[in-house]
Image (cartoon, rainbow over all chains, first blue to last red):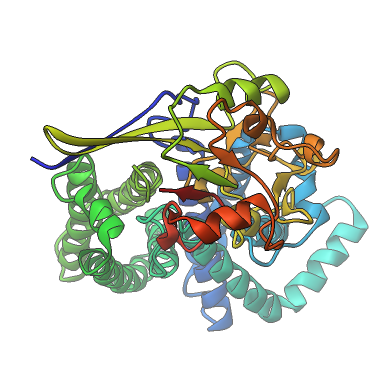
Length: 313
Length: 173
């Protein structure tokens, strides 16, 4: 049998026998970033559409998730840095070719803005709330007056944030599993779907939940469609893409991907939402939890599996 | 740099020279030996390669670096400015040759072609120490340099050209 044997004495921590530099911090951040992008996008979307009254959970209550998720996500990213005290160097330059630079600047903008968004609704959520300081009250009035342009800015930023979580990975041409242009839209759609699920979980209003459920079903369908296209791309790809695909078809990630991400994270909650919309009683946290779980699993699988795929050896 | 795979015996002198010259921390290495055995028994063919950073022309590590710490210095050598590096590992993920690692001090480190020696007009430590003279270093823009002549007169290949990085390590066969 014709064989090729490759031996090397190199054994660098995190690099050999296969790359393992990014761990749960990155996967968790990608999940939280997508979640925040989804929550912010739909809060802003319903404001722009003038449905503030109709969708109280989406616009007000759920938007609290966004700054919390972003702060935890940023904490995870900071944890992952190896040269932590130099993190501020990110903000001394803008590098257009580096997705991480884009992401750092987007987070710099969207995190405080998402806090302002929540703050501008504090008096509506807690009628007894008082900012105590005069300039905060006048700033709040100014934000409330300019809510529509603010919502537009948030929508644009949330799309950049959602796409960036995918492009962060897809920009690495050295990792064939990640290096596919469909990853950006896929992570965006998945992030929006998790954002909708979290909002659905919080909502107490029957009508609002139906609207969110319907929207979420569309996103689940699009996500499934994009996953099929992702794998069609791999199957028709070069040798390294086929190797990447093998990880999911008989390889070590077969069960975690097809069972946890696709079946439990997309198809089952999709069916439950259809049942709910057609009148059956489904505990509302079940589909929401499954979607959030599937979204988290998806990012863990992609981060772990992607680092195994390579060109050499 | 050109590496003569016909002459390399895999002694790893280049690895040790590099570790000594550049104070590479224990357990890490900027260059390494790959032993490749191929064929159908008993017709086997073995060759050795001394590998390191490919100092790519289209370096993905430089493209992905969010702070500009990874950069291409004059002459084409890919370097990392330690004080600009935040240790995010984006360059490590982007390298098809896995030539980078995180130094225990936190920043990302890699082969510099011994820039401190080149500035003095010397060769990289691995080149000077090689007992079989299988490493050739020089300026590819100069048609009469040792490495340009080697590439002109010999057959060669590069590693993973399909990754599109235009690697600058040439393996002579």
